[in-house]
Image (cartoon, rainbow, N blue to C red):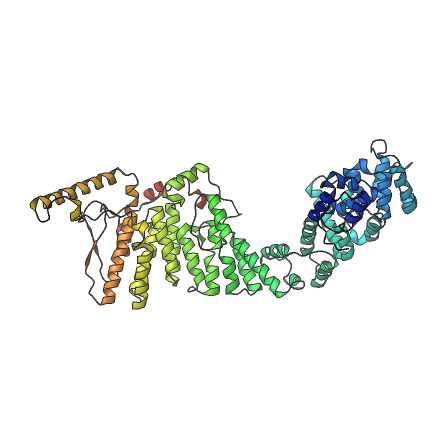
Length: 638
């Protein structure tokens, strides 16, 4: 019977009215179908006294343990409470007393410590309901005939012993939980046996599931997993099994999809799940399965992704949901690694880079011009190219590595020389195919240059291709890129604060106290400017972080040169052959030749590859790169 009473409202009644215990018991009966019913005796001492009555105890324990297992659980957990009166109350409510439990209690009658009269009542029940099948007294080999042994042996061959199994479970009320199973292997043997029984008789299998004495969700999932992998399973039979009481949950469906290896000839056909799930449910779970596969970096996972997208005809929207990392994933990986990688895909977030086996999967299906390709390209720039792992391995970093990474380069690791070279090859392959280079990828490159304090060769590869594309584009595209460069870098305060002061800068006239135009004022201004410059250079030379900003400033100035060239082309002016690079640190100004067809970043990269001896150009050699990656934070990329 439904009731609007709650524990809070009952507590209020108790505080205001001292009701008789009998009346409380009648009130509690209205709550016997609620999940909170077994907890009512814990509210107060008065309510606990109301549950001392055998009838109320019986209701409480039935709700807590279930009708089929209540006698066994009380014998196992609360043996001293199994009074004659409680046994009578349970039997009146049609709770079965298993034959196996009576035999076990009688076999240990000298040590079972049952209250007086309880064992005698059990024996009377046993003789009445089981007759001469009750194996007690005078039978020395009773252990070889009890229901536990019969069940364990018969479930190995359910086709031959199905009637014996039903007699033990249905007539004798036996449950597999009665037999003490010591380890998971023994339980797995029982689960496999029940799965085989269910394939022959779904209703009988559902009864075993309810009375197995284990959490329903766990037992249901394990048994159905064994069933779904059975070679003789048909869609009709699976539908009948689900209708009998088993639950094929969304989690199980996702796991089924994740396990769909096209090379496994023994894997069940997809028609099995199509028989019990509608199209909308299949679509939702296929997205979750694809998302789980995108997190893995194995040949199996990539192969299954392709198969999954084919079988369920997944469209662009579905793949986009799975490919885009969740914010919770980003935060979790940031905590695990100790730093944040601005990766754009689920694969990149969980693996820290991009695999040359992953992005071709998307390019084949959606084309190289698709947005998905730029996302993969971003992950390639961020973390470099990575190889398959034979199995999923967690990220492991020491706390010291995280501290070092946070201090040097803000925690984002540099790539080893070999990884850097392999990444540049992969980037070249993707750019040669014609993937789109858009604002999102540039923002990531600029962020990496600033945070790592280094213009890595792969970043310059990107900028060389980007400037070539922009210079060959139309006027509207060039205007958009000029605006983006200014907004994201050139006009950004964090970039401008690391620039060296202009060598030609002089303080304003108000900085000196002399009459304007006098020779003394001019001399004072000149002296003050020299002093300010000297102090500034001295402070910069003492800053241990100063040298690490050199490449960032150079990136900034080269971007200025590129913007100057784009603006000149929009105005129809002839681009000068030599442009002075501004905002350099100490030393002579650097002149950049901007010949036709080659931009400032292309020249920078060429000079790096040729090993230029210019003081402002740092050649990138294998030794130098390797030396910078020995901070202990890049081992995750191996």
